[in-house]
Every structure is written in C-alpha cells, then in structure tokens.
Length: 568
View 1 (cartoon, one colour):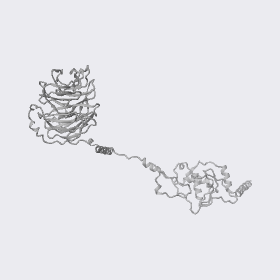
View 2 (view 1 turned 90 degrees about the horizontal axis):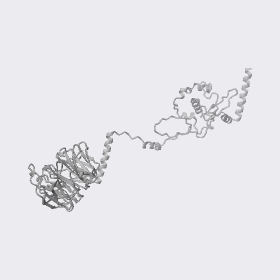
View 3 (view 1 turned 45 degrees about the vertical axis):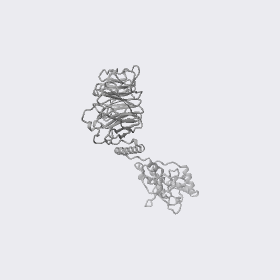
View 4 (view 1 turned 90 degrees about the vertical axis):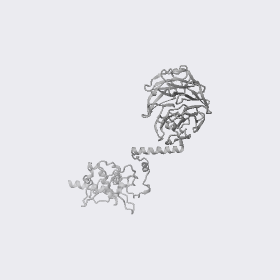
C-alpha cells in the first residue's frame, strides 16, 4: 500500500515539474509571486541569510535548471519585496556536498536567536560586480520596483556613525561607487554648522579686559573728534609761592585799600561767567577759579601772569556753580546737567562723581567737615552729600521751587537758604534757617518783603550776614536767632533787575562790594552804608565780585559778557 502511495505522489510531482519546464520558469514564478506575496517580518536573520546567499549566487546564472525526476521541488523562499524566490532544495551546500534544507540552516544560524536580533548589524564588505559586462538578471531582482534596495542588500552596507555631520547618500546596491571630490566635501549643512558653531567660553577676566579695551578705543575716537572730551591733565602749578603774596604771609591782614586800575583782563570763556573765587589757601591764593555757562570752568594765575592754567570740560550743560575745597587741592562743580564732580587738581582725576535729580545752581562745603557739602537748585529740596560714601546723607525739604544760594552759620551747625518765593504769603519761604544735623527748620520768618535774594554773604568779624535783594539794595540781618533784619542800615544805589548779582565783604569787614546790572562795580563802607567807590568795569551786567584773601588791594569781577577783570 505504501509503495502504491509513493508511486502516485511521484507521478503527480513529475507532471507538475514537466508543465513547469514547458511553460517557463519565470511565468510560473510570477504567478506564484502574485498568489503568495506577504512580508516575512518574523526574522531579520532570515532576510540577511537570503540576501547573502542571493548576493553570493548573483555572479552565476540564477535561472533554475530542470532537476531529474524523483527530486523534490522546494516551495520557494519569500522575499521582503513581495515576491517569492524559487530555489533549489539545498540552495547552500556544505563542503561535503550534502544538501541541507533552508529551514534547518535558519534554525542553526545564530542570528535567528532573539538576543542576536537586537544586536547592531555586522559590518560586511561591499559587494561589487566585475566591469566586464552587466550582470544577467536574476529572479529575485527582475521584478523589484525601480530604485528599490532589498533589505538584505541594505544590511550589507557599512554603518557609519557621525555626530553633527552629513554623509551624502550612497549609490544604489550594485552600482559602481564614484570617487569623492575633495573640493565638494563641504556641503551646505556643514557650512551652516560652522556658522552656528558654539562660541567658546571666555573667562570673566578676559571679558572685562576686552570690554575695557573696546571702551577705551571708543573714547579715543570720541576724543579725536572732540578735543573737549579729553580728561583733564594734572594742573601745572609753580612750586614756589608768588612773589607778590610772599610778603603778606604770616602777618595780620592790613586795611583794605580801594582798587582803582585793571591789572589783568582775562578773556577765555565763550559764555557768561556765573561764579568766581580765589583759592582759600593763602600760599596758593594766586590761583583763581571761574565757572561759565559755556560748560567749562577754568583755573587761572590771576596774580603773576594772568594766564589760564587749566580748562575743565566735565559737564555737558552750563556750569552754574564751582567751589574750591578748603584744602585748596580739589574743585567741586555742578551744573544744569544735574552732575556733581569733585576734581583733584594734582592728578586730574575725579575723586567723586554724583548725579542729582535737579539742576544745580549753588554749592557750599561744610566749614568743619570738608567731606560734606550742600547743593541746591531747581528743586524743593536742599541735599547734603558725603564724598566718602558718594550719596545723599540728609535732605531739607520746603514748599519752594528753586534754591538760589546757601550760607553756613555758626561753624556749620546751621545754614541759610534763599529761595525764589516772592508772593504775598512768602514770609516763610524767602530765607529759611536750617539745623544741619536734624534737617529741621529753625526759622522761616526772616525776610518779610516781597523780593527774592539771589545771593548771601557772611561778615567775617561780626555776627551778621548780607542778602542781595531784587529790590536793588543790600539788606543786613543778624546771624543769630531770631535773625532780625536791620531797619537802619541799607546799601542802595546799584541795580539787580533779575540777575544773580553777587556781593561780598572784605577780609577785614570794612568794605562791601557788589555788582550791578548796568556793568558797574560799587564799594560801600560797612559802618556808614555810604558809597566808597564806583568802578565802571563792564559793558554788560557784573554778576560776581570777590576780594583777595591776602592782598589788601586786589579785587576780581566778572560779567555776563564772559570776561574777568583783576583790579588793584
């Protein structure tokens, strides 16, 4: 019975094989591929093995030859592309010549193990074809779509790991590789990567030095364009005392003599001169300070030569006030740019620089503590600054709009401030007495007339002070509480007319000097309030006058025209 069944099966397979040989292997395979076309995704190792076997047999003729009768016909290997690969019963032969079934070969392949499937694909050499002629078509590549690369062939490519680089696409499997051109190695992505590269870290010390060098270069360019922006140089002063001042040092001040002639006519400012002052140190009193609305202040030798020693351009707006420090080595300046600068004359550096919240019109150093100064201006507050801390330490607030002048009393424990209030009820705002330490008002019922007081001056020997009023007269007040005004003594004859005309007492206290809006300089006797001398010095308003602290016959005046005259 078994023999009959075996003969029947043999005859059936022989008929199938005969029809296959007559119709052609390709048509049969195509029909079988259309019926059996599915994706064998169970094992990557099977695809790798099939691809390697196909690549190895691609050099030979892949057309299936007719087997002799009695040999079993394999059903075919499924390709990933959707076709079936008809193979012989033993497509891979062992060295002994025995044919092994593919199923057994796959089971014995270590790549079919699940742990091996997760491994990275092994690098294998690329397969190239001889250049003698195009290879003959095979069954497993004849029906693949154009440009398709089988999975088994893709696994044969060499895996290249890169970070941030771009590799050009490799040629299709089986094509002749083209040599790379060295000039075209840099692609657009590589150029973009170079442009967007990460900036290397720069230490903070180097960053500060680079920023400083850049700022220095910008400052040099700005200084080259505008010479006025250059930092001031050290002041070149004569080491010896002036020969005119030397005889008066160490001796009591003599009686003040009335000046009659002009010694020097100083022209250098391009705008009105707002304030003038001699150096308070007797041995250096040949130096003379002037501030102007042309944004500068100058230091002159106004005794020996009348020459300008140094010009300081530290402000961006008009310089309204400038004062010597009591030590005679520094100058404090303030202006309409709201800036405050304390300049050292020997080094030319800024010892202190501050920014106020209002335009500065007046400055005064504390008579005892030289590190403190008081400033006022276009604000309802008067502020006290500390040079060491560089900040405001006290504030004195009143219901006013502008502070015109400031005057210290009683060795700095009290000070006076004159304001621009001139209404009917302005008796509590024209002149105000303040306690320096507590910032409290001591008295506000000092001046009861409807005039403003643009300048104040303290008498050097008696406890009284003078107030320049816009009523064209000088008023005399007591310097102690309750600060009563003298009704008997009044100095009249000059004109103020809205100018900030200054006034001052001589060092011995016998004479008073004041400017006038018509350019005259008037000197009064302090005791009698009579006019001692009138000097016709300027063509425009004379706004500043000051006596020399050592020389008894030297007087300095300045005008709205911008010139300065030294009288003797």
